[in-house]
Image (cartoon, rainbow, N blue to C red; front, side):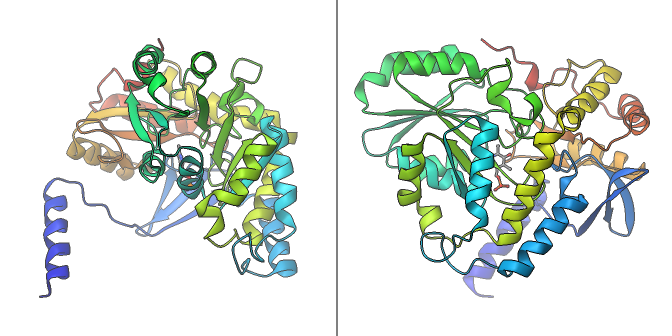
Length: 398
Ligand SMILES: *Cc1c(COP(=O)(O)O)cnc(C)c1O
């Protein structure tokens, strides 16, 4: 055996032993009018509570038709980086719509949310700059910060006082400072204290960036986590994805005109990666059209999540994401298996996606879940799953 294969085998063995090996499971998703979001896995039909397709727009006839029409008009791929010949005519329309919905002056579409964070953070934070990150932020925010020659500090989850302590001690040593947080935490479902962070950032001249991957389309009439209190919090950089409630694929940033201009000439993941295919851009345009015209639809996923938390006597959900803490990876896998045997797909979330000892079930609620199914699921959880009553999402805002 060559040393590469030996290396791979020993890594796999270690992961297997720690219940941390992941497997790709072929899954075909559908939206069934009577049943809701179903997933076919291993020959079985399951009701899925693990899709981030909160509004089920990936299956919406108008969204699919828009993608098909774009392929017919523009072809299957964009052929080059947007800076070369890949900037097909649909991008400008999508960027205008995103900027309008998010209350930004301008927007830039990236290949994915992950690529957006890998491009934005190093383009803005350089040598002599400081990056502050909430400890539970998404992996790609940490990846983006590692690509920047700036210094990174991590503040305790949703702890504005901890961020203030760091800024107090260190802000003076740095030229620019960027604070990055999830707007909705992807594995905990809680919200960042965005107004308090905006006030802190204004005080210390820090650029606030939120990753609204799980807010767009499902919070504040679809406008996302910067709009929770009825007005727009002062978030200079609103980043997000087109791959969750928007139902397709891609990433974006909404910001001021000069910031967007700068990124369009400096973000390496925009410059050196091929532009999104026309179908993805067209699908996102159609999905945004639906979101802007359907405030009732955008409120449903959160309402469904709250139905579930109410059944279980948990604190009211703040977003369509509800974690149920199990502790060990083994416990989370066993819980997932129990629900799967009863026809529910709720994938176990294990380290390194979540911290050691915080393995969990993560429930993602969609507009198409029925209250009857939610009640049955909650009953099953209450009866069969020995979850820990205090989810980390209950950590109070400071
Ligand atoms: C899913 C996710 C991303 C990555 O977005 P993709 O479009 O899937 O690459 C980034 N940030 C957060 C918080 C996410 O949940």
